[in-house]
Image (cartoon, rainbow, N blue to C red):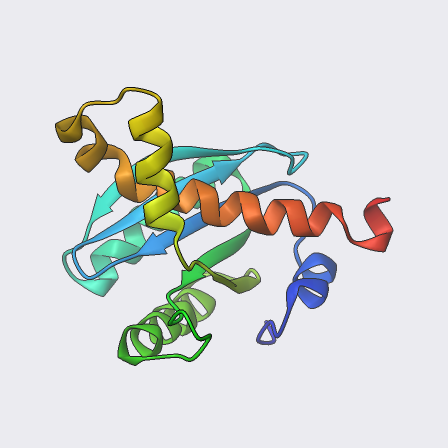
Length: 158
């Protein structure tokens, strides 16, 4: 599959069905899933990273069970929009996803997603220890919801 260069190309390439959102970190990968109509993103789980092949195998299981049509990966850009070393690592991870799965992979700006997830859980009264357990998948949900919202604005969906 050709590399996805933007949301419009992703919309054209991703067949109908659920999307998966990923918030890749150095120790974990937050995972979120959308409904098949692509209106709502929900936190799913956190994958604790080991080796890339193991991480991809765990993702493959989710992708197959949930019948995922495309992947949205949170891209950790600096506040000024530039890409640092962490972004380079996530780009390499996104390339691994493209190579491992025959589906479109969209890199989506994830600035402040973890902060927003933490704030939302604080407002909901979630205890600190429970927030720590859920923060990665909640951040993945925010990343995925941002992409879903943008996809719903595209001319073919209005």
